[in-house]
Amino acid sequence: MDSAIDALVEIFAWVGFGLGALLAGIALLMYLFDGTWVPTRGVLETIEHGRLVRWFDEDGNVNEAHLSHDQERALAGKDMADIFYRRGGRGRMRLSQGSPGVRAVALLAVGLLALGLVSLILSWVLLFARG
Image 1: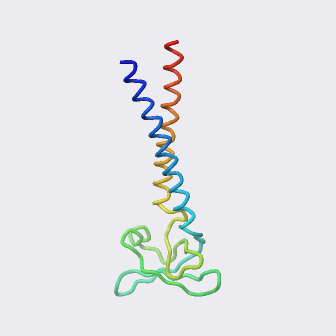
Image 2 (image 1 turned 180 degrees about the vertical axis):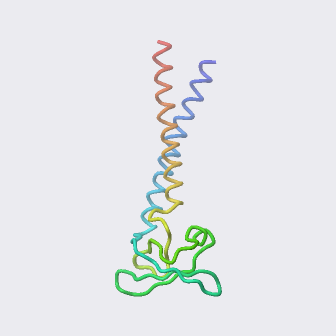
Image 3 (image 1 turned 30 degrees about the vertical axis):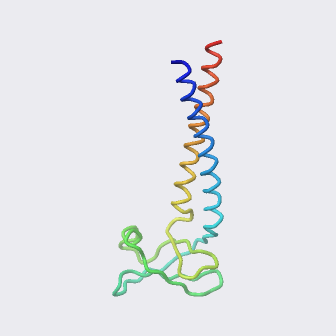
């Protein structure tokens, strides 16, 4: 029975550290490829195909993007909104500076690394408890 518990804890440690490190690397790559998102103030407009947001970028150019259904719900009843646009990209905006996908992968990586750490500590406790 003790060897089964040791094996299970060891598997959790290896899986936690291995997958956690892999996902942390993937999250870092996702963060780097996501680019720089600059805060600005956007003006909302209602057109026949939904709502539209327009903003000035740092070069003084006017950009515009159609709102998704989720963005429309979040900005319901507003004429202006704080948005983030992609530096170097035209017509790309979002409501949060960080990407939800990057955040999800990073949190999963942290959770798996925590599982690996807890399993490693439990392995040491079991090792020293048995003498």
